[in-house]
Length: 214
Ligand code: ADP
Ligand code: MG
Ligand code: MG
Image (cartoon, rainbow, N blue to C red):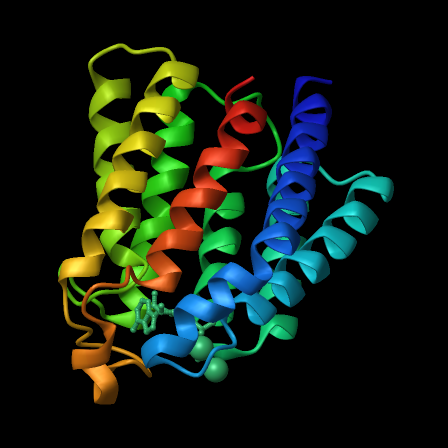
């Protein structure tokens, strides 16, 4: 029963994600248009909407938390298009795999799932801190959350603090020049604007915290 209740919270997290990204589509597109190809908002909307549909279908069919997120991740990767969609989809699948269906997660299990999300994305995309990608807000989030949980913080507080860390880390990417992805050829133009993928990641992690940690 605990697992089924948590599956509902995972679905609510994907609902919040899809809604947030719909509201932010043009902002993220404009940010990506400065040195990239301008499709980041569109891709995130398409990916998160597909994830929500697939996750809702899995939930209705009786899936547990991890399986709901895995279904969402696969649909996100399939439908989003673009680099960020492949990475988000694969990351979400890794998060769901680590979380599993059988238990209502402890803070430690959530931290392991967050690390699995980050490891999958860095494993596939090979970006390092400072390359001006989503990894620049993701790794500070993962490290802040993991350390706070290890120090005994309740998941809710640890997630909120990590989301604030990710938000400042995303803003700080404005000073960097991109070393990975489509924005690299126009690197100089990108200086002064934050990375769109780092920005959307911080926004999504902020929005889903109350669902994953409630
Ligand atoms: P595309 O670049 O294919 O048009 P998007 O516009 O949706 O895809 O996403 C761009 C974002 O993807 C960048 O802002 C950056 O955060 C992220 N990104 C690009 N390459 C990588 C990579 N190798 N590893 C991690 N993130 C990456
Ligand atoms: Mg793009
Ligand atoms: Mg593109």
